[in-house]
Image (cartoon, rainbow, N blue to C red; front, side):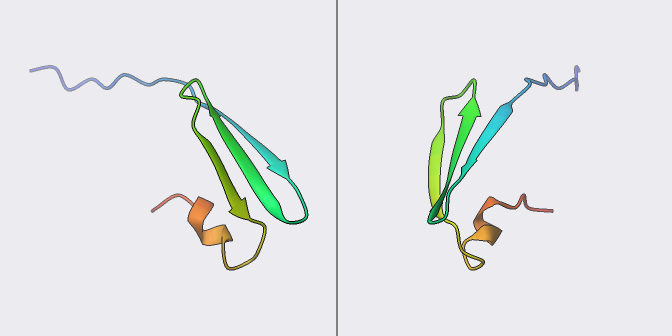
Length: 48
């Protein structure tokens, strides 16, 4: 049984604006835009 995991590097770009945080992931191409507010910031924190 092979339990090795393949790790793929991911680059994350964050454009910080007054109203929004625009987040891009490469190479997947995923894009997110969330309000730049204290209430929305937990949405971008990783789960422990």
